[in-house]
Image 1 (cartoon, rainbow, N blue to C red):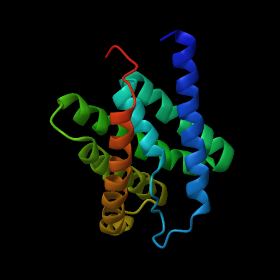
Image 2 (image 1 turned 90 degrees about the vertical axis):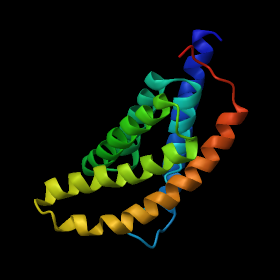
Image 3 (image 1 turned 45 degrees about the vertical axis):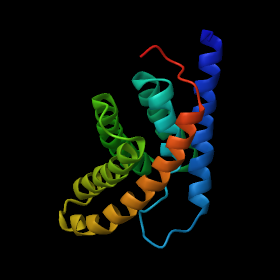
Image 4 (image 1 turned 60 degrees about the vertical axis):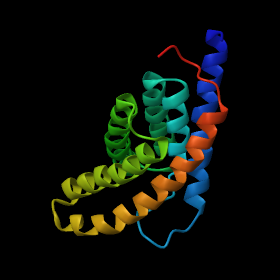
Length: 164
């Protein structure tokens, strides 16, 4: 595959992640701070079909662009914390080659919430907000499983596009 084709596909992944982010913003959730995390489907596909560098790039570019387009500096900071923590662990789990995509996604969903709570604790200068973690863990597990199932289906159907 040519460099131009790979670049175009990466751009499509980022655009798709931005569309998923916008869709998620339109959905009211009963639990404050909880989301389905559809953008993580794109990150999983990038990780398993493009490789680590592309997954990191897609995730970080998506977070910055979504923050600048639809959010604020604060929302971007929360997303960066969650994205970096969950992305790093998801990469590690994938590289260990003992975890299935759904498990990688589930752990990623939980760690994304932990990253966001850590930022909230620092911003609000209180650890009391950590009491909200169990609620977010449940939503993160459910979201992680749903996203992992969708991601696993797509990963099985798409060819690998990197030499990693």
